[in-house]
Image (cartoon, helix red, strand yellow):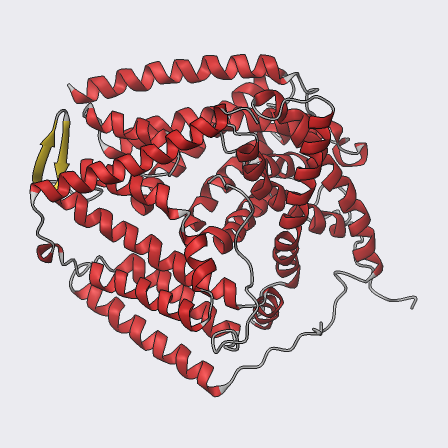
Length: 298
Length: 237
């Protein structure tokens, strides 16, 4: 998925209750969120999970950056609803609810669209809350305690550090090329911008590799870490509660065959049409806006 | 200090490390490729291109280091972007892995990097394979939506009566063809500019100006468009 502007997500420094929770319970929450979200088709559960994540965001004091970062789902969410109303990703037969010229809208699509959207929103919010309230170093220290190979851990941590460095580099190179008369957008700009960024980065890596070499990277033996992460008893209680809740929700969902509550969602044809028109227009509006931007002289 | 373990004695027996590159170099090249994958998407949107270009790092690492290193880059890319865009993008790691394996084996084992036409065909194969893997994920996780302009095309295919998987496949193949072919040739240009110590063992053709490639891409995409429109109309009637 393409990204607009700077990458938004990273640690929001703070000293909230959530910031002080050990990274492992938080990682468990994210995993459980994903598992439960994909097991259930119950929109009450899904949007409840999203609300809980939002509540955690408020507790963590990161609600503003959280909502800003969650904005990336608007284009995909609106497109998802519009497409699902036209062709539900569930087994036929579908119940037709409205006809709009050549386009048929189905009742099942509205419910299933909301299920898919709920999954994405719930998982995204929870993951963002955890990322925003966990120091990356703590996360990687925890991962290495969990016996994740240290090379893998190192590569992941280094990637996260490199992204902002490269972004800055891209900005510098694009400005330098523009000052030499390069076109600022379009395909002609691809090679003059990509090649220097990539080649510069890869050449710089050789230095980094020598530096790692000189510090004995890859040598056998016990590795120690400067950062120490300690959990409180309450952190583990939170993890156990989360596991119990997830097990309960997961079991009920499986026993009830997805636990769909589509019968609760009774919609008038006019509502379905309105949802379709609004989501399709929001989506097309965003695309049109992006197109206009791309034709505007930069 | 004489018997301190040497970090990067080239492991010639390892099936992954056939390049005789030091392990530390590989360990640093991989995060760079991953970061470039993620930043590639950012450059593409900064240049306002209609393609993602977020698999260039995968292509470079698969060709230069080997297909399985490329696959690792693919997995780490989606794990890394899961920290940015949420865990729902994780299944797309599979797409990245398939692309890496095809690029890697294609150039290193099947000799598909020896001439420009062969390399062009390799990129088409990558594009088709990526769409085959991506379309079910897009349908199951995102209900057919990708959040970019191609969704309007998906909607149009649905309106003329194509089914959901078919519509997603049809619109995705068009973006995928343009994206993977351009990514492949950008990767080629970058590989040529890399230090010779990294690329001496690879049998790959010299880069070509992107202009000719773009014309060929336009041709392929228009051809594919005609085919998918025809299929959609046949499916609808």
